Length: 226
Image (cartoon, rainbow, N blue to C red):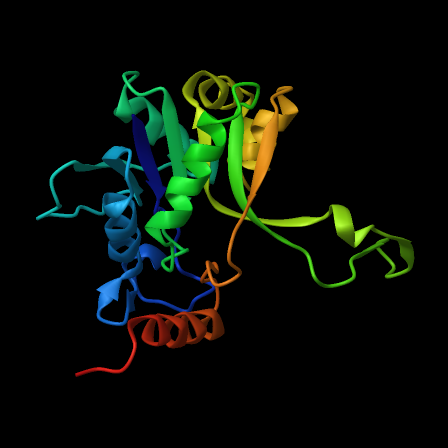
């Protein structure tokens, strides 16, 4: 089976919120609540561990959901949640609470992709890049244009074999602090990561504009009221 870890320790500063980002409401439910709902509905996930900001406590959690204190950096929060989860599950799914439009079907597909590829250490949701991407120097001079056909914009959920994720999180504090996603740590440790095509609507809420877009997409998904 798979244990799901939800990273929910972000401050919400860039969102301009007066509370942790994961506890900001979206269509009458917190972003964290939307993620818990989606992962609870996904087949193969029996337990969920949420990494929260220090000093934040949640009550009346659904069965199978527990909380742990997050860390200073994202990877610290993942490591804390992984330790709290124990070692009984072979696969570990990591998801950002800041992606509240997650569909259970996507979580199931990412899990299935890793199960179906015994040589892979991780499977990650991602979308093909549609914009032309250029690499520029500090002065703004373009150094190269990257081949768009090989580029993917990475999302969560990301699913790992437990040993691969635990090994990657054993890197030094400096390396962990600079990591923007867990798959990059597995890659750095020599692991094999595969991509699973996802919907761009599985967006990450970072700014007030993102929050508004997420509200519109969620309303469209639910359809007309009544």
